[in-house]
Image 1 (cartoon, rainbow, N blue to C red):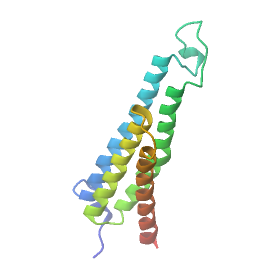
Image 2: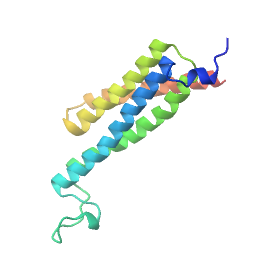
Image 3: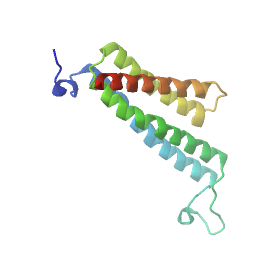
Image 4: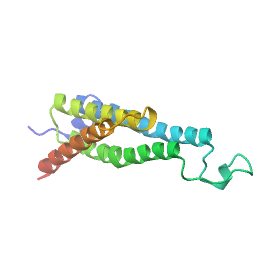
Amino acid sequence: MAVLLKDLITLDNEVFSAYAFWAGVLVIKMLLLSILTAIQRIKTKTFANPEDLMSKHQKVKFDNPDVERVRRAHRNDLENILPFLVIGFLYVLTNPSVGLAVNLFRAVGISRILHTIVYAVVVLPQPSRALSFFICLFVTVYMAIQVIFAAL
């Protein structure tokens, strides 16, 4: 029996509801990294634009390691969360198993939060960052493969 699109893209569908929840969490997390970048810039007086300088004695700087670490974490989010948002939505349309889909979305969300924590907040040595990165990567690739097979 074919499932109608209107039955998949509704908050009554547990899979879509889980996707919407984790997508919202991850978007908020990415936005918070913008704020964390600004906090680091103010704290270290590292500004990339002349109009942001707090006094005439300051100079534009691009090389503060604390600011750059947060910026790299933010960039990593853009490189990983944005593909998840697209493929996760398409994965919902494949009508996957509820338990599997909910746990895949949960794995991506938690791994991305942990990635930010161990990369930009409380810096921990490898393999902590690599593990959290690869969990998200593998889940996103798995969902992409499922979407491709469903589209054949």
